[in-house]
Amino acid sequence: MSSVRPDCAPQNPRWEGFWRLADPKISITSLACLTVGGAVAAVDVGLSWTWLAILGLALFCMEVAKNAWGDVIDYDSGNDLAVAQEDRTNFSGGKRVLVDALLSRRETWTIAGLFGGVGVALGGLIVLLHEPAAFWPGVIGLVLGWSYHGPPLKLAYRGLGELDVFLCYGPVLVLSTYLVQSGTVSWHAFWLSVPLGLLITAFLWVNEFPDYAADVSAGKNNLVVRLGRPLAARLLPLIYAVAFAVLLVLRWQWSVKHLLGLAAIVLLSALLVPDAPQLPFAIGVLGTMWLAVLNKQDQEWAAETWSFTKQIMPLLLGGVFVAGLLLGRPGFEGLIPSEWVGMAVGDNSLLSTLLASVLGALMYFSTLTEVPIVEGLLGAGMGKGPALALLLAGPALSLPNMLVIRSILGTEKTVVYCCLVVVMATATGYGYGYFW
Image (cartoon, rainbow, N blue to C red; front, side, top):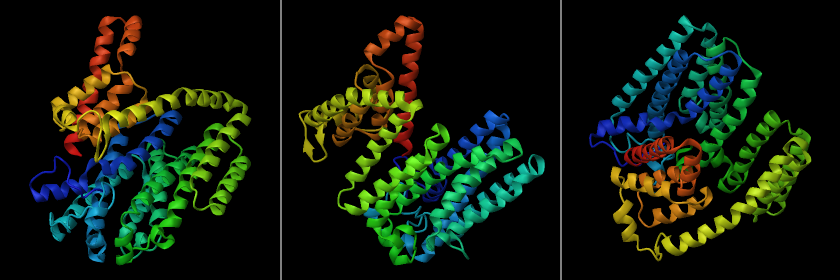
């Protein structure tokens, strides 16, 4: 996670250090596991929100503890000290609370102990008062969480950290959530946990690239270090492809034989033409479309996809051209002076965010053309909060959209709907700009 100071980073160094360890976005992966396991349980047996909340709080506490002890261990190994400033991102480079002298070693271990103790206590509460069978999954999760950084296994330093993450944020947490809700486990929940674990592993894999030099110097032999960046970069799309293939087989009953054949062709093309990564990508996309055409139940999906492609591509290309012409790109001024953009929406204030949200609600453009437009605005000096507000309000509303909604819902409900979109987009954008 990030050690880059957020816009709202507190001035008190201890509080900033704690914030780096407890930043709520660290729990997105755990929340995804709770969502998948809870959703399957809700369909099968119903959902207890109370025990779901207790489990979620326990996982959050363990995430904070894991970040704290991981920061100490990576500091002691020299890994965090070796990360160059230019390689630090919002999701790599460690928390660096010791490197930046925000917390002492004792304070960091205290946070690890306190939050780890609360997490274990909440887990014990679940075992003693609700579901005794949750004991062993809890023990497995605790061992995996510690062993990612901690001795004696130190899996992240042995090329096994990726497997640890796949198991923990895939089957272990999803099945634990299902078990707490239902008292048993489910093969359906297990198979759904596989693509989730793969995608979270891919997320970790991506964020090992900026730390490559530091990991090499500190002897942190994760898979990116062991394989080398060129080969690791080529293998990364395979992780996404396997996750996608599992979903196709589970949800749409695609033929495993056909998918394996397509995978072999894609892999062969990547090996034969290593300097053209676009070729296996194109073969994969076209092959997937061809398999969809052959599959009767997916022929309508394939036809609609092709129809949308024909509609969207001209708009996308036109939007990119117009956005580049008017807004330019970083370092190259467009027809609209960047000073104008900076004056209107150049900061993350509530007024700038509200203005961006209102303009997004009034303008009419397709979702994909919104991306290059916002990119150009960011390059011209637009704040992050207003940019997110524009991205949220733009697809949800437009003047033609409002007229159609009014003809169906009436004036009063349309006004309420439009106000809700603007308010929610503003609140979300302002929160994002303030905290991150």
